[in-house]
Length: 214
Image (cartoon, one colour):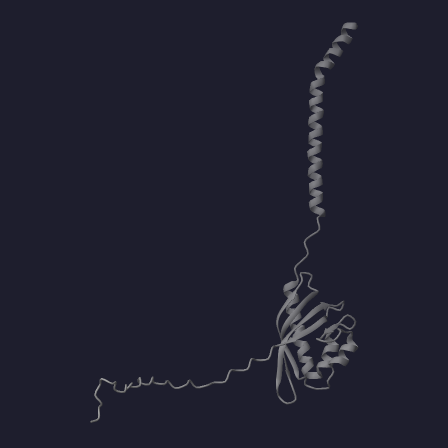
């Protein structure tokens, strides 16, 4: 009996390294599978990149800016600014004064009761963010005075799409082109003058020189 027990104990000692190796391999395999699951889960739950809507927004801003000008021609500049600037956040920035904020204040500042408006403009370029709800446009403007003279300049309008999907101006500002430089008067070149021949020097006769006259 003691021999049998001894043999079983001895057999257990002989098998221990194999069991340890088996447990180690099982643990390693489990760790690899857990890492793979975590990697798959992180890839699946990663937030997708936002879509780029800037190209479409640029075209929409250009269209809104052109419609802004067309309404100024049809209804006057005051009504156009009131309709296209944001009712609450719209801001008109002009030189020498504080910014004019809000639809009603902008209307009162821009309304001149002139239809069609003597102020016309056209966008040259527009920019927009990838979200497709914010951007800006710039271009050239021209103002015709009652006497027929004109002033020109450049403008910048910042746009934001509202909850109804309409583009409204948040900020509008402009600058005047510098006046043209006066042209220098055209003068004809002075005629070329011929150098005079050197004057003949006549010396009076000396005391030892005979006079030319008898």
